[in-house]
Length: 130
Image (cartoon, rainbow, N blue to C red; front, side, top):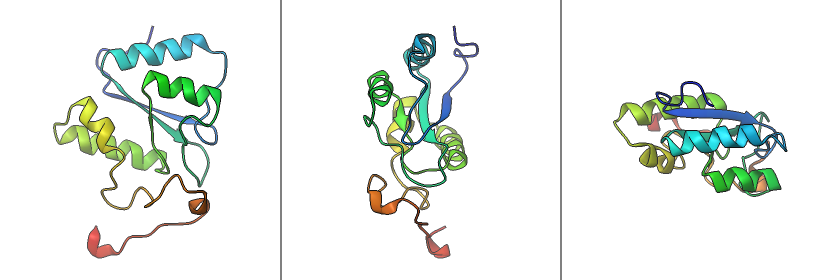
């Protein structure tokens, strides 16, 4: 079981590379499925300093995608957590939050986050947009 799934609004997973979880952990995948069924937004970020979470890159990514896990693209884990708090604070439903995560609010997502040309580059926004 997933302790706290009844009150948890979001789970942020910080995984390997493009969003790869350990393989052959059926209890882990089952727990994520239960969390999704209870309306919890499950988001995958990367441990890497640059690059994007790319859904469907490897078999385990496809399994996460089938569960309905939301890729954070190239947002940092910290930006993802802050954005989740902000969106839920606006009164959005879990489905609205999951969709809104892919909309850049303040430059936290690169203009083309799935492009390999963004790997290792820093995207900056003028302070007037903040």
